[in-house]
Amino acid sequence: MDAKLRQHLSPSFATLIADELKIPGAQTFDVSNACAGMLTGLLIAESRIKSGQSKYALIVAGEHISPIIDEAMRRNLYLHPRAIASLTVGDGAAAYILGRSEEAGRIIFSEPITMAQFNHYCIGQACKSHVGPQMRTRAKDMQTAVFDNLGNFLKRSTDYMAVKWDEIDHTFSHPTTPKAVKKGAKIATDMMGEINFLHNNSVETANTASTTHGVQIELSLSSGHLKSDETALLISYGSGIGILAMHLKLPKGVENWS
Amino acid sequence: MLSWESKKIGYTGLLKSTLKLAKKAISNAGIKPDEIGLIVHGGVFREHFRTEPAFATHIQGDLGIHCHGIGLDSQSCFSFDVTDGSCSPHVAIQSIADLLPALPTDYALLCIGDDRPTKHCDWEYESYCVVAVIGLSGDGPKCESISYDNSNLVPNLTTIGYFDKSVKGNNFASAGTVEFLEPQSSKNFFQGHQNWLSGKHMHEFLQLVNKHDDTLEHCIVDRSGKSTTAKWVF
Image (tube, rainbow over all chains, first blue to last red):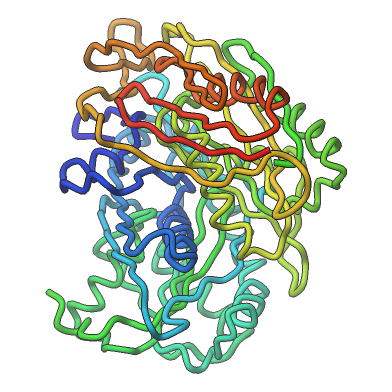
């Protein structure tokens, strides 16, 4: 969505970004997977770098979703309770650059999973009667679906990635709401053990959809919580319901990034 | 590419057609639906300009592929969409080629197509639905490489969706004027019309597959001028 609430369709937004940045030789395309879109993009980029097809990849996400609140406010919420979800929304942007490393395993992905039986729980599309987007969410059902499967997902993912839970320094969940993150953390703790550092920073930023991990990492960096070579687990889930996680060692010198 | 199906569809009904063709393609590939572990959809236009969830999740859900809770050792499927104008099919194929080797599955479903978003949209396009089963090994055309060329990109030739206050509905508009390149075809090269949607590009390419026994380069030039070329070996 641009400032006039128009939806960019074609060519890919990535193509326009590459053109602005004067990167004519890059392959460019968009990935769409709701709030899990950024991690899906990172997953594709990582596999392309690993296979030697790309040296570096720029993965960018931007969200202008706060107008869904305007749409919801125009509704009679008694008749349209799903217009206001039990999620918070905020606008955000994030960018990652991935490149090859001599050290294996600096980034590892879980097996990505879509629980498509829940694909109707959150629908975003153009509002049929006004300018801008609308969203209809069965928020409680969606959270329940994630919570019911989170424990097994984490157990299975840490096994798949060969990562020890107690050696993960930082955990970033998808911040639907701060309360939901706490609930998820309780499930994770019961299944996996204590979480070393749960980053639950979304009170100020809200849920910035696909950009959320970038925004949360930036906040944690600003607070001085992240150091070179510490490990972090990013857990992402989005409408669909797609769920995947990325384990990474933080880049050297990260504490000096502005 | 182990099997494929394609057909022209009406203004709407992409999901219904995709499901029908997917069942046929999966059966023709000699596999069961549950052996599909990755679904990637490529296209630009979706019903009511839907942004989420990914169209591929609807395909997975309606095909009933691994629609169960996450167990400690249960099989699973992953679904998402990619888009890059008319070049979307090649991006989708490339994404499958990137991810499939790393996933605990041997088969992916490639789905291409567009829906007329709303009744307010003037729809001069022919919509096609294309589905293919792609495997890590097996018989069938092999996509050897995909190359990309943004050097002829005209960045202001964009297409946007917007709310048209005059009709109180959503429409889309394409900026700029394009002098369209005509389709080109020679013994080992095929390039469709620049104004075709993704589905038609793939449909027309698939009509040529059985006529080749060596190689075929399939070039797609998007309205914006950018292009992708897939080299297929038979």
